[in-house]
Length: 287
Image 1 (tube, rainbow, N blue to C red):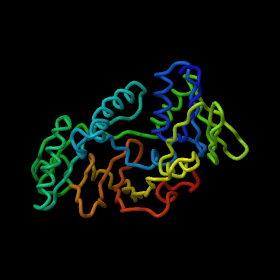
Image 2 (cartoon, rainbow, N blue to C red):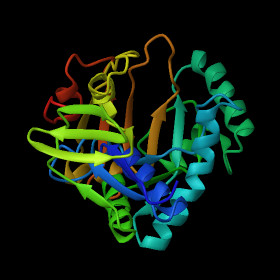
Image 3 (cartoon, rainbow, N blue to C red):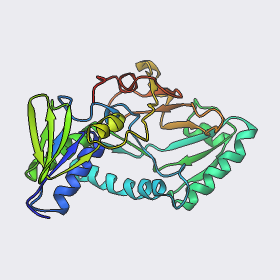
Image 4 (cartoon, rainbow, N blue to C red):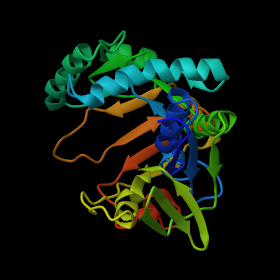
């Protein structure tokens, strides 16, 4: 339906991409993005390793696999068109023990079925050729795995929305959502925005905001926190590309080394969970 207003709660990359796509597909529809922070991409979009995954891990035929593989080509083209960082630095998934070789082979078969481009098995000697300071007995090499700057992409999405006549309203923490005859009222304290339809893209706070909309609060969000440590400037030469371990299903926490599109490489170690949504993103706790 043309000439309606659609609201989106959340100016992370999911909310902004949703708003941008609506504006592109439905001329005449006005979109307004409501974000509690004073800039976009403050939460999960700005707190990740910046990797553009090629599709190695996901079950073939699953929605995750399809979206990952299709999304890579769309994102690459968008970054090229807008002059945004997109660097295919490649990725190693390294086995360091004999008992990891079977899981590595399973990953290889998954990746082949997902049509991950140019993936190959490599030997211990070939690992050293690609990453002289990495150790392992075998690895998978995905040369097309890339890194990008997701906050920069989010900011570009926001520009696209505004160029189409939409609005990104910052500093608008949603405090209530009320169904009214002929529309929906979204409030932030005394401020009010009226929309015809509302889409919630609130990330770690999705269940909290869903409750404001009189929806069920299930499934509940359980945050996973990543600990990131920057390499010292005189040690950045130790890493050329992305280095990941073979995933262990018994102990899913893992460490990887990830060069970034903007600053120095970092080593990340994932922890199983975080009791605080604010600690998981380093941000304020309210929705």
